[in-house]
Image (cartoon, rainbow, N blue to C red; front, side, top):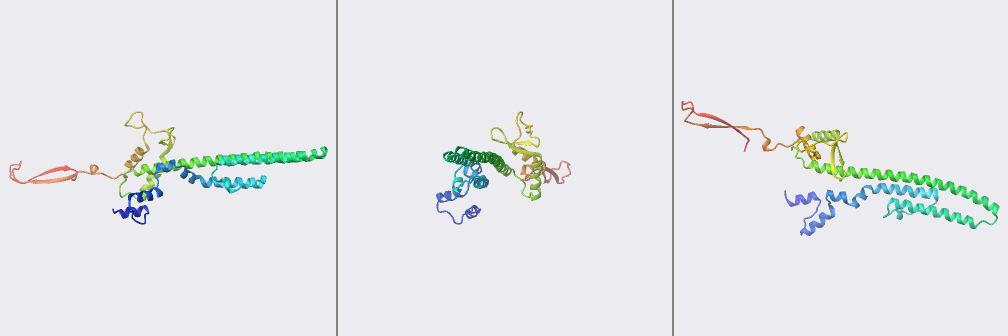
Length: 273
């Protein structure tokens, strides 16, 4: 393989004049899998669109129900919790301001009191509506967190599975049907999850880990089980050591064991060289 083939595969349009120029191109376009899992920027990109939708729904609700204008800029560089609680304080401040305004307008106690009670009743109703709305927002936010955590977990498990599969030496002539069948077999029999240390483990569909028959007190790793299933279904490549012996024929002339002076044929078995 020539260097231009490698550069073409990486998407580089021209050859590089120095190692530093190549490093700059590579670092700006590629990232290691492990680094991607730990990169906060990548994580935010995965869940960013969901966060934006939730924030826009809250903005619309605040405007329609509470006449509170919230700019798009307030959504930027903020956690959803901070955004929600900041606007709760704004609603609270708005109600307190209206109550103070009513108190200063009292001139005739009887009529003013009736007006105050009417408006207080209305404000109390709106406050209860606010509480219910906040509960709805909290439920939506918790659902969003659970969904995001699940998606991120599946993302990490999928990366791990692809990396593990890349280490298995499948036979060169493996077909797409065999690959699909093999993947479906693994999905039907096993499940990948994380242990308390954050390491990926493999279990059966009932959540039970599988004992290692070769080492007491140890469990089988995902790669060991993947390879066992590949071997059982004849999907691995066959090495020279696994090849069947072939017959080697050697003809000797003279000094026959039979004493008749005829050529004698001896047969040897071994693997091809």
